[in-house]
Structure formats: C-alpha cells, structure tokens
Image 1 (tube, helix red, strand yellow):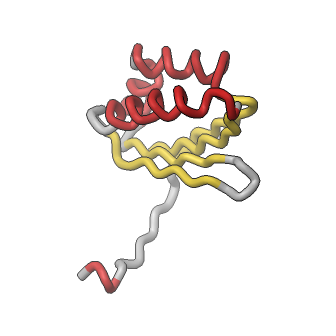
Image 2: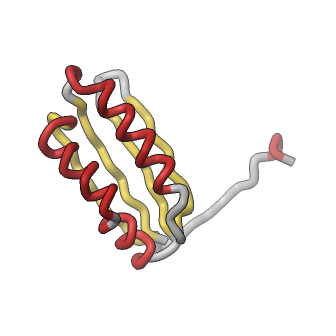
Image 3: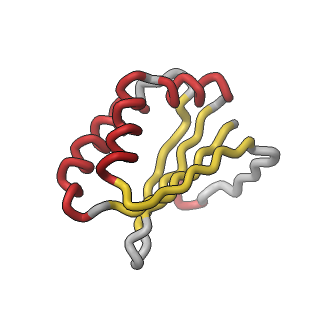
Length: 103
C-alpha cells in the first residue's frame, strides 16, 4: 500500500474556489482503480492534513498523473496554497484492532 500525507495551508482569499476544486478531486479519486481511502483533518492553527491510500504504486502514480488532478495541482501551487508538504510512503506493516461497536 502507498500512503500520501499531504499537509497544507490555504490562502484565505481562495477558500471558496479551493472547496469546489477539492470536492471535484474527492469525487474523481474515488473512481480511480486502486484507490483505498482519503481523510482530511484541520488543525486549530489552520494546517490541513490529508491522508490518501492507494493499493499499489501504479495506482498512486496513475492518480498523480491524471490530467484533472495535474490541473488541480497547478492551481494549488499557483493560487490555493501558501505552503504545502507531500510525503509518499510505502506501508511496511499494517495492524488493525476491530471496532467492537461496528459489529
């Protein structure tokens, strides 16, 4: 499994347009073969963290290279983000404890 950790800070003046593009990307990523999950969190200091999981490096690379995603990346660099950091990780171990309330 490949996990991308995407940390970012937004330019406040572009938050509405960012929200529209982010919703489009969220819909699109769910259609990608090999997509596993995505969750986004916001910290009190304004930093946002998204954790995106793909089943394989090939699936991750296909998402990274998707033309609509490439355009969103360009908008992010040029307009939406005041700062960002991307870390791409290969999962070496994965442990799970079932949620007893989910049974």
